Image (cartoon, rainbow, N blue to C red; front, side, top):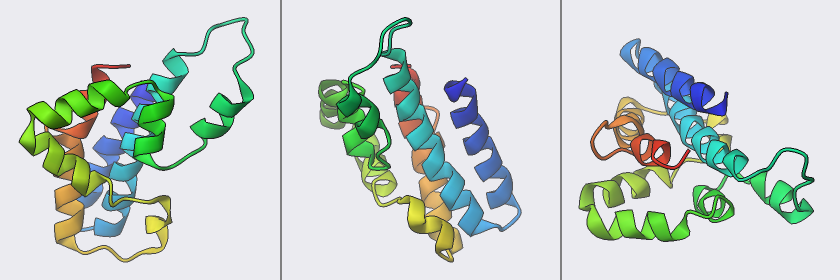
Length: 133
């Protein structure tokens, strides 16, 4: 379910961007990454098992790097960063996002850059996340 939500947020962001609603597009593209990473975390949880409290609390983070750690994907992320310079650039762009962006006025360029960073089918952030969910 979280996988569909992440993809849906990115689709909604693209619709907003196409209609010059840059702030909303930026905000939702960032949430697509967060939700995608949380999907990777959810995959680690077992049915009929109470997860560790620290794991649950860490899952409430909005910081991508922290969520990557909770998902157990630190090595995979580093491998991708080492192997793919465009992904590295995209990760840097996406890393600027924060949930408080919902209160910001975002211009066209930052919204376009973030959507490209998240949605690029060859080198984008969501493409990488999908390999692990």
